[in-house]
Length: 302
Image (cartoon, rainbow, N blue to C red; front, side):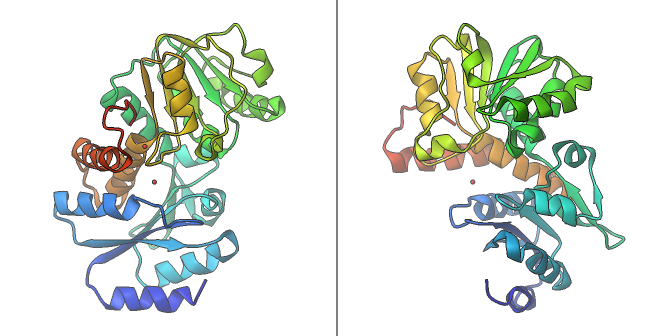
């Protein structure tokens, strides 16, 4: 990466707008700049939001430069969320639980707040946009990485009947389950323990489906009227979304709604305004349906 300090200083000097950005590697695919531009127009906020390709070994220098040049807030995506967690001066309850930060905010006293809006973004998409009832349901999360850790606590607070984390390495799933057992009924297993079980909501928290791969999932895993939800998003249906459709899910969607909802929470942290998310989700989804030539596909997917 080139001299970030000079880049951000030039950007700030060229505009009186407050500066925000998303850091990640890779980042060229990100829809976040478009989303926050739509939010700003909707709420009458004067801001600029850019996408910056920042590899992990450049994160601290780039983040120091961004805030030194007058930046107000950052989103951090793969592979920077744990680095952002360590960078923050103080952490929200959600960030503490997730051990990952996707939102950094400059506060009035000059300190940097680290927050994680992924969990609330997922909940808002599931319960508001998709009208899915979580209380009393059986939930399965596939994968035991950082994406899983960020959503377990918010899901358990909805009082599901059960929540199971399945992973290729069961020990990693058990570690997360043990960390959150104080919040409700959560268990863990390997994929080989899934045959014969049935779930109302299956969430793919792995990145595998973007490359066409899936965990070994047995038939009969989805309950009647069940939902499949891929945390990843793409312009074309992910492998997991296709698996859900093929296996009879009533809804099989990807993470476009979650992306917009978590962005709205970050926008609120930064600006104190809550943008309307439904029009933005509808616009982005309509655009990709038109582009991928599948207007009838039932899916919802930075």
